[in-house]
Length: 116
Image (cartoon, rainbow, N blue to C red):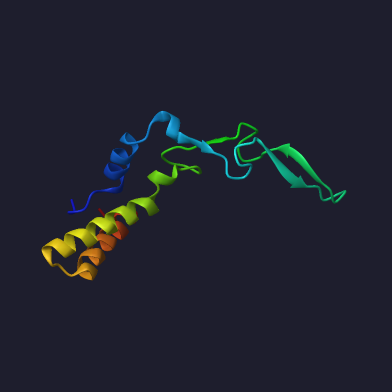
């Protein structure tokens, strides 16, 4: 076990801060309207049609994994948060940021490759 919080543990903590209602966010494709202006290839006209992204509901439901991961639960967000915490710890403890960050990224690479 490394000295950094694992992605699964971090994701569980981050999910605790989200309400069930937070898992549905406004669809960016249609701005929450449920309908989007789409271009017709055959006639060259624009028309209002049911949004393909949200199926006309205006909301996109996110999950913890899969194709639609909630923006606050992604691996990218995890790396961003942990890197910020590493910076703070390095300033307080006067450690070399690049050494500690390299250790974190090496640990993540081993975890991703299943060597852990």
